[in-house]
Image (tube, rainbow, N blue to C red):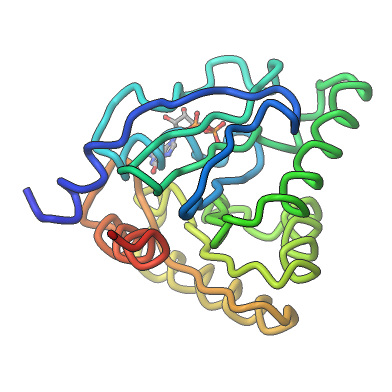
Length: 203
Ligand code: GDP
């Protein structure tokens, strides 16, 4: 097992929050995970921590979700934000999560970066762009995982990567992107772990 895999394998569930005032008081660093429902966020979190059940993969996309906090090691956290963009969510719940996620970005002083999951076959949706604009307004750095890259051949996967790289030039905050697969660990797992390891420095 590589040192990076070993480090993130130690991640454990800490707590859940339904509202901003329920977020834990943490010091240190936190990296948030966001993406459209079904983009592969839970699968990515499970792959990155080599744990099959850390983040539940969503059988029922859009059900009422929570902000889940995971502790990598003391003072380093991964934060799983509710997936966005599921059409059947009632407006009341959608508005609630929009305000919670926006409030989260505006108030969490320990937030050191956002990892965004986008399906490699349909990246940069309108809601993804809106999320990136929030990051830009907070000058929050972003790293994008183009998920399910195992579903495309090398050529089309590279084309998608290139298109997202080009689109990111329109944003002012630091932003990087890579191919990723939760099922084929030769596609992007180490690269993503390296970014997390840099963003969540060991004491
Ligand atoms: P979430 O709603 O963003 O948490 O998405 P999930 O992690 O639940 O994934 C949605 C669906 O995509 C599930 O059926 C997963 O098994 C599938 N999936 C997620 N990541 C990958 C991947 O890297 N490769 C493949 N082939 N399927 C994936």
